[in-house]
Length: 429
Ligand SMILES: Cc1ncc(COP(=O)(O)O)c(C=O)c1O
Image 1 (tube, rainbow, N blue to C red):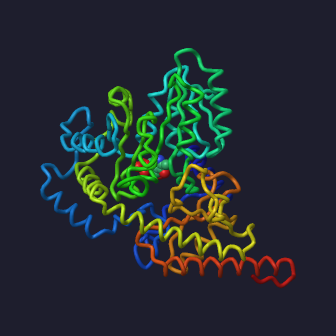
Image 2 (cartoon, helix red, strand yellow):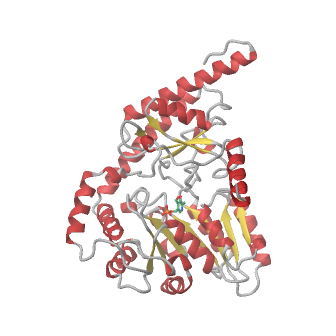
């Protein structure tokens, strides 16, 4: 084995030993039958929507260009791309919109180039990896790239005060948050974040960037996200909406000012040095936005919120009998009265983490019963926070939820029994 191969193999073996080796899911465990999908981010079930499929096929047949884009946005005539940007600028009540090939590219591109030397980045500790990757490639040295405790307003305030003291004249602080966090399903207390930021930085040099990847389509009027729901559009520096989750397409849009848009066009490398989204994706995203605009998605979002509420109520009852060291909900979901912040009245996200040190065995057990819910371990989540992440979709039925809760109870009973046997005592739930 070559020296390089030996090192690569050792790194993989080390992951094997720690039970954290990543593998592609078995194609037979895809979201489609016979497995019930408790895993995908297809929250509105649009990927399986006959209506969207029919609309897409008709729109592709009528589109002036239906296939690839032919090159970088900067080199080819992206008439359909520009038309979608114009539409999204209006739909989201923004001053400017710029497409990226993915949410990852958008975050990586934005955070790599927009913060200037002397600026400080404050990110929620649970922010997506793409923000960290962008920040690492930026001109901010490590001490200027800081995090604050997840959704903790006091910690944010402390870090903002520290940043204010450290900030050179003429510099800015970027505050990066997600409106819905992908691993925990927590919602950011956006109104409070805006308030604290504006109070401590009255000269408006603290700039909020909100990643709405998991809120797009499911929160806010016509699925326009939490920023729109709270009418904070004018108080946020930039927003990211992605098309690959609830919209069943791919790509992303950054909503910001015309100046920042122009700057990104000149300096965001993941935008400049890549082939623009294929026209197919533009048409697909446009068809999904039709469903947002005509209210179809709002009805699906209502269904989604209702089935999420049903899942949570069934889980709370079932988990009350299960020792929390085996399986539990996180604090923000463990009681129906737990609100994100007093100011927030949004329904819980369709992302439900089931915390357990036995995430892989639990996921495997669910698969034997025809359900697909993926285990998530470090480094995707902090050490000790392993979970099976359950995502529900608009087409998840009450019977699906009942089967899931029953399977969890049976599994937990087995674990309790095995723990008892190891101790030489009989244990039952
Ligand atoms: C919060 C968040 N932002 C950005 C992304 C990246 O978006 P995309 O899948 O379009 O690259 C993801 C997806 O994993 C995400 O969860």
